[in-house]
Image 1: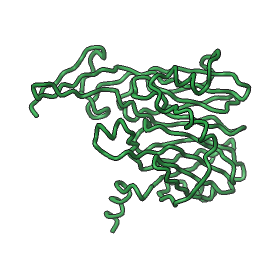
Image 2 (image 1 turned 60 degrees about the vertical axis):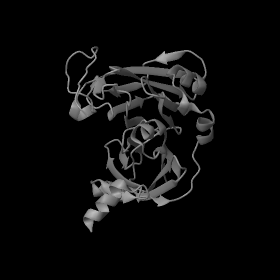
Image 3 (image 1 turned 90 degrees about the vertical axis):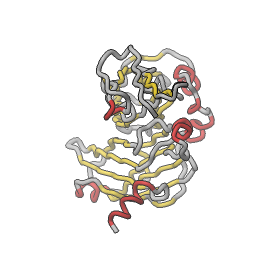
Image 4 (image 1 turned 45 degrees about the vertical axis):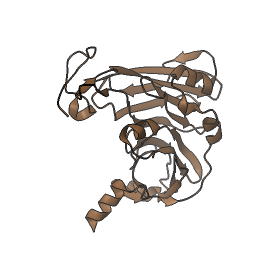
Length: 299
C-alpha cells in the first residue's frame, strides 16, 4: 500500500502534493519552507521532451486572512519548486493558508495551525484541496504578457517603465559557479519598503523568472531555486552522432524592485556554469568554459 502511495505522489498531476516546515526564530520571525511536487514543464521544455505543459503560476500564503507571501512563477523555476519566506508572529498562534494556481487555472489550498507546524519540528507532507481564490495583482501582471519577453531590458521597461535605478541596495546571493544549472538557489533580501520584485535571467528562452507582489510591512527575505534551461544544448549532426556543444557559459541574474515611493532598484549577480555530468546534466569537463566540447558516440 505504501509503495502505491509514493508512486501516486510522484507521478499523478491530480495529487498536488506539498511539503511544509515552519520554525520559530528568536526575533519573533517564523521561517516557512514549502515545496510542491511539480515538474515545471513550460512550452519550451514540453516541446523538447514531448510532454504536457504543467507548472505552477502562483503561490500565496495568508496568515489569519492577511497575505504574507505572494509570488508569480514562470516555468523556469526548478522542478519541485521550493519557496522559503519569513513573517512575524510573536504569539505563534493563528492559521496559515497556502494557495496555489496552475497553468490550467486549477487552484488548490491547504490550511495549517501555526503552533502545530512549529511544534512538529519536522517536514509535513500534505495534499492540497480544490478551491477558488482571488490573486492579488494577477490582472496587472498577466495583462502585460510579461512572461513572453525574451529581452530582460524590455521586460523591465514593460513592467516598471523607464527611470534611474539605484544599484545594489537589494541583496542577492547565488553561487559564483553553479554545478547544477537546473537547480540554482537564489536568495533575495531588502530592508527598504518595496511593493514588488522581479527576478530575471539572461540566456533563457524567456527572461522573467518570477515576480513577488509584496504586502506592506512584510519581511523581504525570499529563497527560490531557478532553472537555467539553456545552460547547454545537445545537437545531433548529419552523421547520426551526438555533438554536445556548450553554448552558454554563464548567466546574469537580475533582480529589480520598485519601492512604494516609486524608486527603482536593481542588483545583478553573475553565475558561471560548471560542466558536470552528474550535477548539471552536461559533460564532465572542468576545463575552460570558453571552449566547445564535443563527444561523439554511436546512437
